[in-house]
Each structure stands twice: as C-alpha cells, then as structure tokens.
Image (tube, rainbow, N blue to C red):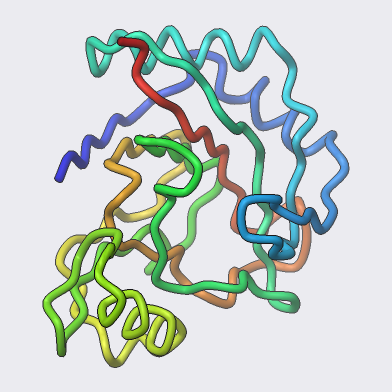
Length: 189
C-alpha cells in the first residue's frame, strides 16, 4: 500500500496555520455513514485547495480530483466514532498534513491480529470483525507509524486500515490541540 511522507509540505506553513486557527470548528455529520465527527472546519479557501492539489500532483504524478477537504481538531473530550478505519467510502487516496506536533502522536497503520485484514474489507465476516473490533487497539498490530511533525504530509491509499493517534487527541484548544489538514481525493484518469 502506498504510504508517502513529505516534510515541509506547505511553503507558507505559518500562513496556513493562521488560516486553520481562524476557522470555526464544529461537529459535522458525514452523509456517507450518517456519523457525527467532532472538530471539523470545512471552510477551506479555494486557493489553498488548489495549491494542495498541485503539490499532490507533483509528488504523486497523478492529477487530483479533491472529494472532501477540511481541518480536523482533536482535543480530549468528544472522540472520533471510529479508531481503526479506512477512508475508502470517500475517495481512493488520503492526504494528511499535520499542523501541530506532540511526542507519540501521528498516524498508525494496522493489521487485524485475528484475521490479518489491513485494508477495507469486502467479505461479510471481515466487515463484522472490523465493526466489532475497531475501537480496541489491542486487537490490532501496528504495521507502520508516521510521527506527527508540523508541516509533515502523509499520502496513502484510502483502503489502508489506520488510526489517528493518540485516539484521545491532545491539547486543550486550537492553540495546542491535534490539528490536521485532510484531503480525500481521486486521481483524474
């Protein structure tokens, strides 16, 4: 599975961080799964989206069709509904750009210990195992980990089983919380 890490992703990182910290964050319901996700800001300026698409294209040699773009703030309190999950219901690839950093924080990639599943399942028994076990990290083996470093991007196959770490988030608010720029995208064929 594709996992590409790029440091110094944004040339104007301080400006992007300022934009991120000026947005309003709220709980959003994602229509694909009718699930509430806390700490979302979707009002991303179009020039920023276009710049990110160009950067992804230069890194992957694939023209980009963005499907969903947002900043996500994760602080202790309301948690994401899923721990180990995939993004394949949204798009083919995921881009994360870490806007903050914390020791031990990042993105973990996982394999289910009992079934060996490490990507989006299609078989009913694997889907059930995933649903049953997605919030218990002791049932999963971490196969890769990308440490959270400010302005580090990670691009990966959206079918990959992964989890934001720590699952509790960190910090107290927008000034020091777990803040990530996210773009789900498809290649233009």
